[in-house]
Length: 165
Image 1 (tube, rainbow, N blue to C red):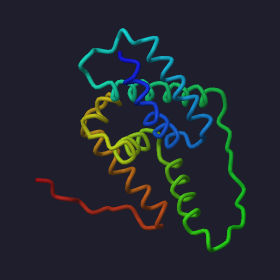
Image 2: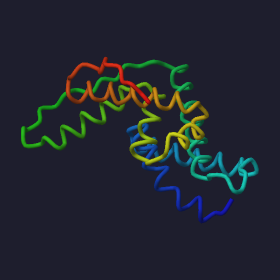
Image 3: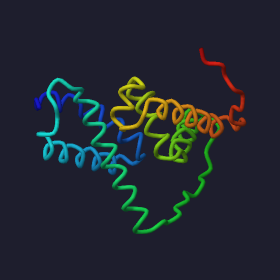
Image 4: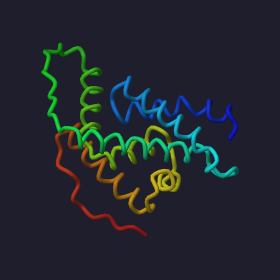
């Protein structure tokens, strides 16, 4: 594993982690844990394979383990108190609504959505990183988009069937 290749991927890892967990401090911890795990397991990486997908797969596994640990410790309901906001802050409100919508998505759907939209990964790359079939990636992405649309617009989820050729 080339150190420069890994260093070049850190900004992408940080961006994905921040979008995934929502908290910059927790995201930096997730990136650090991912890199630590990658360094400890570098002998498992196969030269010639996609290093980015390998690192994202490690991040996915680290994140899933952290979520499981948190659920085992306690399920505390933390609701943020609504603050009054001026109407001129529509952009900030939309960003806040988007963040809340992302946080409400199931982890599996949020991961797929962020990898496809934020990291511009192909369905095949996402499937490899998350170790799921490509059809699962597609269905999770579709469900995530529908739920996010409902959260952002207040519209009902799409119930129409599409013909795929």
